[in-house]
Length: 110
Length: 117
Image 1 (cartoon, chains in turn cyan, green):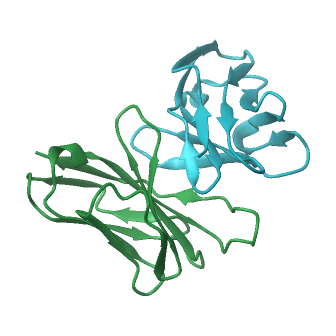
Image 2 (cartoon, rainbow over the protein chains, first blue to last red):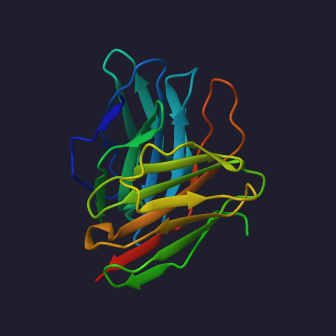
Image 3 (spheres, rainbow over the protein chains, first blue to last red):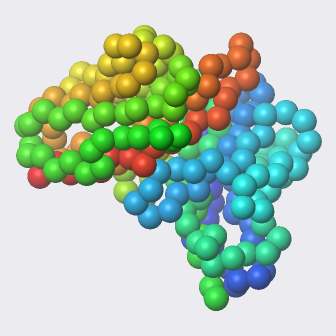
């Protein structure tokens, strides 16, 4: 069975600072990893994914994620945070099915 | 529209009633998924369709839950004898035809918020 851990329920970052949202995973076989963002009263929006290839994946809205096989991590990053980045972020791993973490609420402080 | 659509956006019902939730996937997407998201949790898988057939229904919590996709496009999630614990946001997602080994991105609808009183 696969699983995802997002160790931080809440992350606060000052506007303009770099941000990191952490994710670790467990899956048998090749890891297929995804990040989604959820704004209030809206569905999940796809940000980026790792399937194979370069460990640094670039996605929407300036986000990127670094795949680290030895640490089984797939942390989401952005060099300079915007207030509009404030939302709920979910990491997910695809094994037999897409399994999500519990989410991290990111708040960007003006 | 270009995205996944779900109706209704909100549904309030009484305990014991029957409800139907509808999902209209992205045109051309043969894979369709239903998830349930409770407050403070990530989405949890319910059922997966490839075409008209349910390829994996292992996430359905009990036999009160059922889903159909008769023509391989629109899907309906049906809940009989609703209970207060069924209250949640029900999300639908679709993806392009799967390759043999590599999963494709799932694109989500806005969800249906179900409240059982």
